[in-house]
Image 1 (cartoon, rainbow, N blue to C red):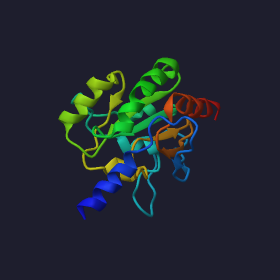
Image 2: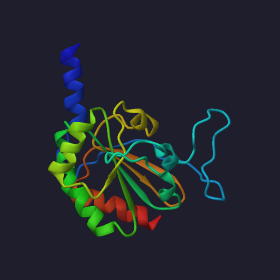
Image 3: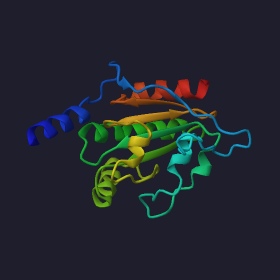
Image 4: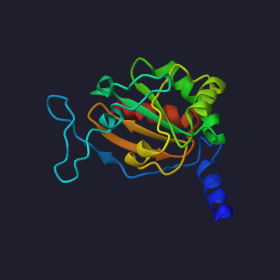
Length: 185
């Protein structure tokens, strides 16, 4: 069992900085937002249909409570990472570069998960990603909500609430290309 678990962790965190390979893409999810820009609940499941509303009330790495309303109607990139993930660490500089290039047009939110706050804080310090707001998800609740099954992963959410989740390393060029497509939507 331990060998199987270790193998799955290594596979999920593998990938490096491959900017030419195709990451595994989860199904695109369309999540409409009500006309008044308020998230709507699905009567069948009770789940919030707005992807960004799922982040509401979660603690941020700096100790605050995340206000998901700042994301309504804004193109948003969620970056799912784990402190122990080597590929996530390699993606850090690309995220920093993307924030510098697109930060005026796109909101960036890190979603560290599956570990304790201390290692998450160390990861942010090591990678220089402190400019990004990080919503902590120690037990993987948000990861599951977004269909993230490995890391690194990204959710690209356009201003209309349509979302595409990409699991795998994107590298600088791949991340920039995805953001350009997000802005063109």
